[in-house]
Length: 392
Image (cartoon, rainbow, N blue to C red; front, side, top):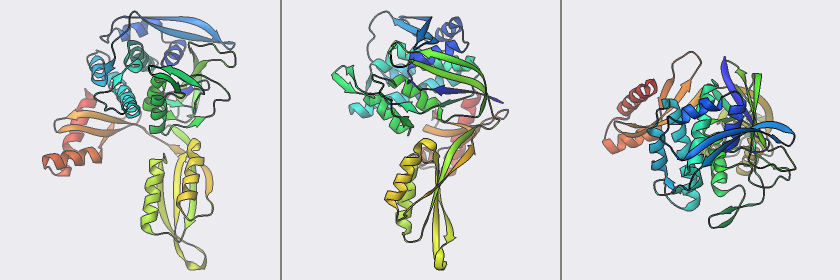
């Protein structure tokens, strides 16, 4: 059995809400402090208190920073994380979260990942939020994390150059890159999803509700206490199925009057918009005409967008939709510095079995072209070195 957590983000998600839910679920604050002391980071104090938000009791975790910190670049943050003595898996997850944050910040500010300065998201409290959440989930024995659709929030927030629309630009970029399912905020105003919260969820969680046997719930409080809703994050924790399952939908339609070039474009378009898979099956339609059936699997939250894309990009007059359940192995992308240069692999994990590694084609093809090596040799080297890094 796997230990799973489900983030019920009905009132949003932020770094401090995730930390609060983790402590509320059973991680002693002293243990969290011990883990964070392994990171070369000073100038802060970690405290918690029991509070009430909208009639619900919850834990609020506060990261009090003594003085203003200078803005950090991604390399500054990665150096802090990389020089820590936390487990390798924690360092790898933290590096992925901050890399994704930097990519989003660079995009919205028109800079590069190397030059963009991470103001709020590179500050001490953001590093504590990210690394503390990762360490807390490890202490809780959590193997897989899932998340609900996220509320977008409405209104504006004060930025260094004046008011900014909500969600904040970096948050919106993170949600867009992850094809995150969103829901209307039901009139709630203010920032419901912060950049740090969005980075943690879109990097480390899978959107969807898992099948699980529930045994505890942690409530993490946000700093605000609005009158119209309980400003808390609920983290459900329990035992999941041997192979995690996800509720998805299968969308199909029959097409007999489009060229292969047009259909190939449709498939690429659907995959880029968040479809989990898309394929064609040869069929025979009325009057014996040969045709193709387009099949697409996507999440329930993406159903409307995928169906709209099919109706817009193909000649079909309608689509069929039915619910399906997909069994999934835990997977992640590992980016690392190989002896041949930057490389990436997909890591597949199953309970009780060693991880399997599959080199990413694009990264290996680039190395092969740059170094004049056969692609198969690059694959072999990258896979061997990735396995060694995982074992370390």
